[in-house]
Every structure is written in structure tokens, then in C-alpha cells.
Image 1 (cartoon, rainbow, N blue to C red):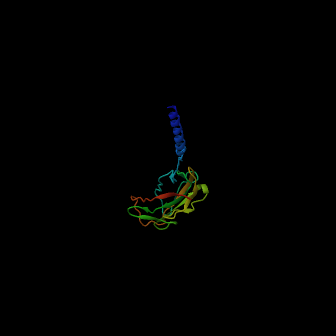
Image 2 (cartoon, rainbow, N blue to C red):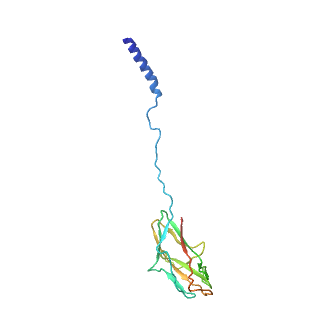
Image 3 (spheres, rainbow, N blue to C red):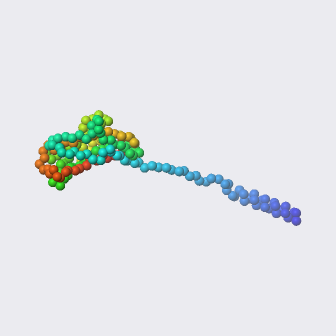
Length: 175
């Protein structure tokens, strides 16, 4: 009986010796990497949302902001942006003032001024392809700017009860 147990023990030992090399070693065969990504965010804000010209004479001008009072455009995004400014015609129910680079009969103009760059109303605001107001505005940075409004040199149609409205748009893009 003892011989059988010893023989059985040897057979089991041999079986284990043959099976153990076939069992893979316990090892890590994968790893995880956590990836965090943030999308490019273009966002700007401006301190004023409107500019009321009020009553203005033919060929008159009105400034919106100067060295003491200016508008502030702030980069609220997470990348540096270029700020371009464009405008629209002023439209009422009885008449329209067309936006152009120079005021004329029934044509008005607006110029923008990048106060930080020290320019004086040299950027004519146009309907498309508007000028660059700020070439490089870093994330969380603020740029100072102002406008000058140039009324038409001649008004052939005007209804005092019919105010004209239009927009000036600041657009952010990557430089």
C-alpha cells in the first residue's frame, strides 16, 4: 500500500511537472491610458450691445468711445483669436442708408479704432471682408476699441418716426 501511495505520489508529481509549464504565468497583458481632450473654443464678448447715434445732421459724425470711454472686446475662449469687424446697411421702413467705406448721399460709413494700437479710426467697417480690429487677442485678454459714425452727406428720404437700424459684428477666428 505504501508502495502504491509513493508510486501515486510520483505519478502526480510528474503530471504536475508536465502541466505547470503549460499554465501561463500570471502577468499583466494590457494597460489603460486615460486621454483628456479639450476642443478649441472661440468666444468673444463686448462691453456694449448697442450704439444709439440719435439725431445727426447731414455729413455729421458721432464717436462711440475714445481714449476715456472705449468698448472692450474680451476673448472668452481658450485660444488666441483674430477679431474682424463688419457691418450692415441701416434699414427703416421708409429708407435705407447703405454702408460703404466713405459717406455720400444716402450712404453712411463707420470706422473702427484699435485704441491699444494707437490708430485713429483708420479701419473702415465694411459689409464683408471687414478689417482686422485686433490681430492677436490671447485667451482671457481684453482689447480696447471705439467707432466713429459718419452720416450720409445728403438725405433724400428720412422719416423721423422711422428709425434706421443695423448691426456691427465682431467675429473671432484663429489667426
